[in-house]
Amino acid sequence: MKKSLFNLSLIFVSMFMSCNNSSTGTQVESAATTEVAPGQSAVVDDISNPNIVQVAVGSKDHTTLVAAVKAAGLVDALSNTGPFTVFAPTNAAFEKLPAGTVEGLLKPEKKSDLENILGYHTYVGVLKPEYMSDGQQFDMVFGGKVNITKKGAKTFVNGSEIIASIPTSNGIIHVIGDVLLPK
Image 1 (tube, rainbow, N blue to C red):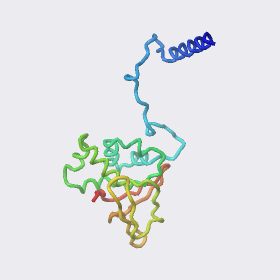
Image 2 (tube, rainbow, N blue to C red):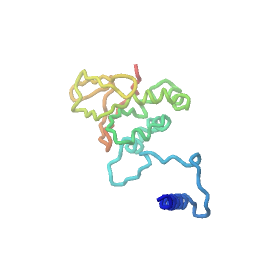
Image 3 (cartoon, one colour):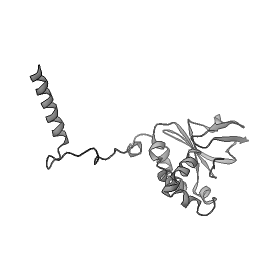
């Protein structure tokens, strides 16, 4: 019995070592030098509908938002299954902020503030405009609640009109003309 266990252990160790050998030698990487596998954002799939991040990356009107999502380290989070609703300010919306605001928020030391602002634009779940009603409030990922108002066929979030709604594989994007700031 002991001999069988020893032989089994020897086979296991041999298999393990052969799997870790490089093609040019027997060097084994340590845990400290191995790279972390990329997240959901690295998945390439030409068949499925694009997710929130992929749609935003493809929009010439959302380059500032994409830069902010990258700086905040939220690309993988917003590429995951969701579902999410993102109220996506246009580049023009970011230009309405005081000079230097965007540049300041993109600095590494402001990552926490940027995460909070972007979290205030994100809801866990899908909020289609036809399901929103006047006076509703929704708890966002960070920063509290947003208020929905309706004026005829138009829908507003915190007073900013939803210009367009784009369904994605992991939720919906509502394009807005203002940056929503947590209160």
